[in-house]
Length: 353
Ligand SMILES: [Zn+2]
Image 1 (cartoon, helix red, strand yellow):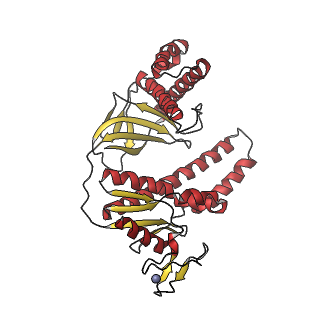
Image 2: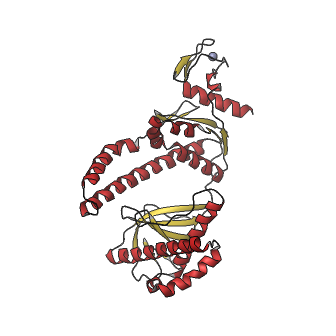
């Protein structure tokens, strides 16, 4: 199994200058090759890769960069084209300084004593290691975020952790007020990370709009915004990782719904809350973690029609409209929370099938 560790780097000024140059060179190669591809309608990876030699002659500063990283930049372009031709994404676009920029270092690096050595840089870069690295290191990449932080991504091949066997099955239902309702009656609380930082962001956005374009203070405010976004994203991801692993750890079968997220995003007022909830990302994590750990993941279509059914006695409450969140079954008198009822029904249906 492949796994990526992410650690913050703590480069000194010299290292920062070196990394920025290398990042710039890789971006330059990517953009130049993309330009060639467009102008000459040339999409073959091998043909494009060959052009790096010419680029190095034409732009001598490229010789300062290690060639593996430059080649990896051309590999990134190949991947972007593959995705485009397989209709998984738009036509590749030119990379800008502003976005997150990263460089791949496929070979000749060393990680030792919380320090990273990379080709052509004499000094080593301190790594802020917050946990141990388990597995065989395959390759590394360094990312500079738009707020100017440097991260080390370490791709490792590792054995899958064996989880204790269980016969439990669970259905999850997305919520807006709670993050998810589980068919065992538990709830995952919603952490409104974006909501919490929203006020701050609004204030900063205002400040940015008042500042002169290109001014130092404007740049400062822009970096601050990027920092808030990063922090929020990290917090959110930690939360999603923790919760998804818990679901996988405790259950052999996990049932989730399809489509719902799409439908909800179409409703403009809800889109923010959806962003908060990060349901799609959560589902993605559950899916791949299920594969890693040999759990069964079942996705079913949207559930609206059947959620009119009582999960206890099967009575169909035809008069139930979408706005009603809670109802009492006229036949068996069970009190139902709509989401909870729906997820129990999902679970029952899937286990029978
Ligand atoms: Zn009933």
